[in-house]
Image 1 (cartoon, rainbow, N blue to C red):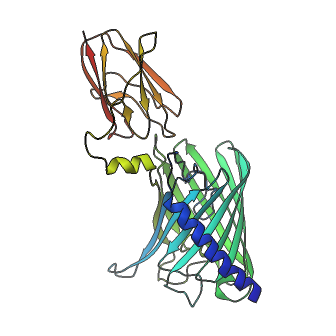
Image 2 (tube, one colour; image 1 turned 60 degrees about the horizontal axis):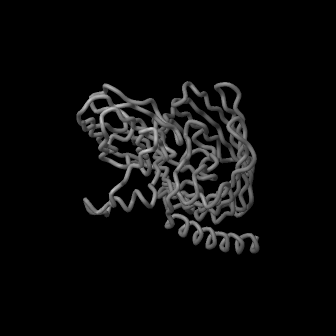
Image 3 (cartoon, rainbow, N blue to C red; image 1 turned 90 degrees about the vertical axis):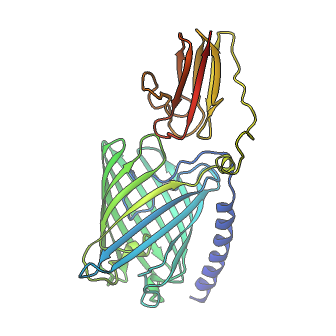
Length: 364
């Protein structure tokens, strides 16, 4: 036990340092954050992001005290970033822990390292190695996912060096399913329970999850009898509160690339002029990169053709402001071509990212 606790302290310090470095670094790569529509609320999805691209997940669960004048809130803030194709570092933090009697209502941090194992879109394995500060426990989980048709089945095995602050190790498990109603909409549910000790009750959660078309943002509405979304928090029934059910939501948000952050502090007119290169065919190219059209103002001659190519991992559209012409969603590498046969000014934008605006000016 002494060796386990010493190892836990070492893991905590090492993961804390590595996670802080990872979260502070940002490079010009694209984000592909957690997908709430592919996993159940209380199981750990493989942290699928491009290297050094941080993301945040806010999970918030609450219940009204009788009379409706007081609210019990169980927030969980998750920050993480990939440091390679299969490894990510991060943390989960809640200010209202229910893991153990000693930590009840206090702070709980789960420092973690996630690993993506073999698999693809239809099936896969992932793992999580973590340290829970409230329980003083080194924890781990292995998650398996398999999809057939519109149904995904999820199972997860968990182990703790100090389960719920009891001083003894323990094991827990969770299982659930996701029903993919459309490409952007899913229903999900799961149950989780500690086997040793076996006095913590069964935790369950159901949710309806959305993926916003053309973005990496995800949102879900949830009902549960559990607490914070740490490994130990989702392995037991909630510890306090008068109601049998809590309600809440989860929201996934990318935290931006280095080039996106630099645009916030860049003065107007400070950006270098973008040059469109005309090919022999007379086709002029506009690059879609870092949530911007480049060049933002393009001058061409009547009869010329413009080609837009999406270099972002996010889906974009090229849509005329008056909706008279436009593209479908363009995934990364996709393109759209239009020939301009009339003189005039043609402003356009991206439908899912309306802040992306540009203009084609056609001259005689």
